[in-house]
Length: 200
Image (cartoon, rainbow, N blue to C red; front, side):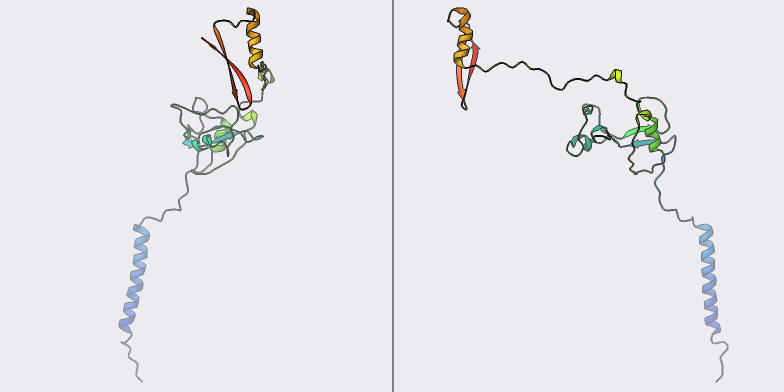
């Protein structure tokens, strides 16, 4: 059997050409095409950034909400019971995220420094639960400024009168005659009687 040295020559040239074309395409794409972007990571809140934060503030001892920026939380008293200090926003005040520049130090739109420190480093969309100590918030309670008010108060109760007793009370000062300016009507409903006095 005789070998044909030129028989594989054409196929070898084609294979070499394909390899060179692949190398050329790789080099050109590496040089000319932009690199693939890194996987998306949400931005991190840093000092100087303008941020918006939805929040719900509650007391840790009884879980009662004292403030929120979320309308659904404000309306839901079952899941989020409210503290006595909670005030519903009406009129122009809307429930919307708290907006501020991270790192601000004064102004009406500038939250507590401890709150800002908790927001710093969060990614957009992150959720975080923090507990602020009194010293980091509005300070320790001043007993001189705490006024305890009783929730119960004395109410004067008048005894219920029957028609006969009412007539006797009204007629007594006038010699057993009802004053002419008043008409006494007795009504009976559901087993109890009541007296109504109306002016003529």
